[in-house]
Image 1: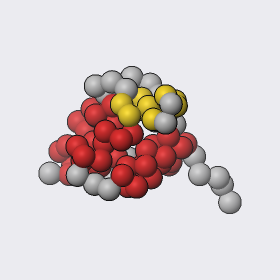
Image 2 (image 1 turned 90 degrees about the vertical axis):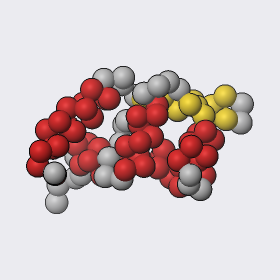
Image 3 (image 1 turned 45 degrees about the vertical axis):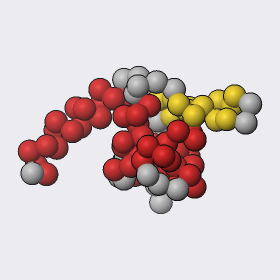
Length: 94
């Protein structure tokens, strides 16, 4: 059996609208994980789980700042790729 590819991990990570939205939010700059829950209107445990999924897929990096965990995009070009994927699929999904 073949191992899961990194592309599959990325596809799974992008498969939820809130995770995609989190990436767009991080496109504005680094954020503390605690900032997502109020803005997205979800429980902090969901935010934590989703950030972990995005990090394991290689889309995010994190660093500790005291008790806070700061998150950022692993590569700023990620938003360009998301935009291109959106354009490729726009007509097919409509």
